[in-house]
Length: 240
Image (tube, rainbow, N blue to C red):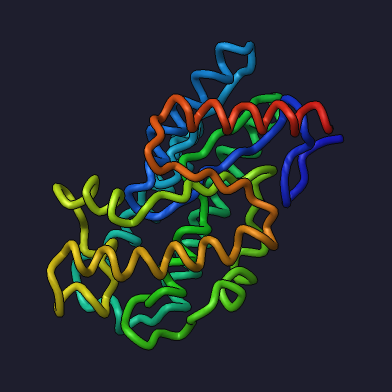
């Protein structure tokens, strides 16, 4: 069975995404998971969800333009544009990564490991959006706008204590990680904890209906977390 819009066939063609709050360790874990799968003989495409690199130069340039458009939210009164605009811009970005990066890799029989997909963005919008009292306050209001975008075959939610994530991120935290309603009224660390706690709650609310694998990461190293992810994928492969 070939890939579909909502996921690839289980086996070699599988799309795996790691999710979690900012500072959860998604990128380092994705690298470790890809390395383990490679050691087991799988051909792996590692996708940095915010820095995906298509093979086609035209598509790569276009995708770069979309990323630049998203980054404008850090440089001006972006709240004037409203949540729906930012959600649709991001949905457009992921639709392009799906079509031009993930789908070709799956069609080649690769395992795709992404260090994030659109779920954290959905949770962040639901937790406060581009301003306090935004247009959305629940993931189920936002997810339909991502309907054309491929769903991963398996999502692993790295459930990291917010205080741990804050300690990791404080050295180079960006305003988007603090929440628009908190960034100007409290210290960066307090704003991060308040906002990311809400983001975590929304991610957990998506985990049950989405049948995600929730990985508790407290007091665990990357190698152990990656081993749990790969063990679950082996069970998924055998079930398929």
